[in-house]
Length: 192
Image 1 (tube, rainbow, N blue to C red):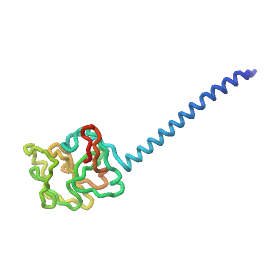
Image 2: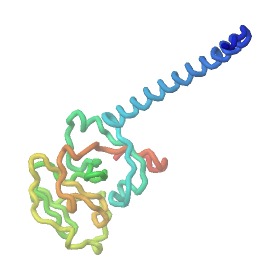
Image 3: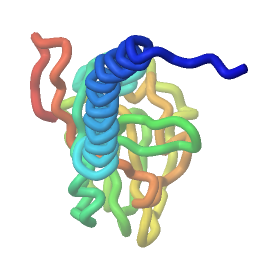
Image 4: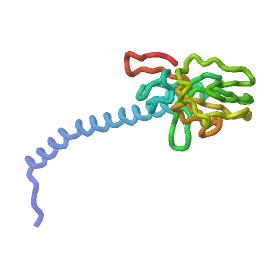
């Protein structure tokens, strides 16, 4: 025999459902804003600005280990130029590295005894504080001619950098972003 539900029971269930509905609407509204926020953040980091954490000392003294930066992604996405001495983020397989562009397409580069020569001209690099006594001959290379789509990247701390001397030249498609705004630590805020 079916049990009869009283009017007071139905009223109580209806009141409980009415009490839950605003909470459900709030949850869905909050979830909607969360999804929109994530989509905006993904768009910004994919096409406009890339957050970067510097790992290691290869860019000392320009950038230090654990400096937190924002890098310009938009200029790369829009096909802007990559110029000599720009600081870029490049991908090496699964990893991303921060280095300085020292050679652009068509350049002939030599690095010998800690001296960088581009197209036969010795480059004065004021941003380097390398100790010449730490220079190793295995870091040298002679007259490397860059192809149409090749860039040569080196760290500012030449004796402590794994860069194009190890990986070889990078293609434009390997370069993710350029230029850095250091915003943490706060005492090092600067544009490089």
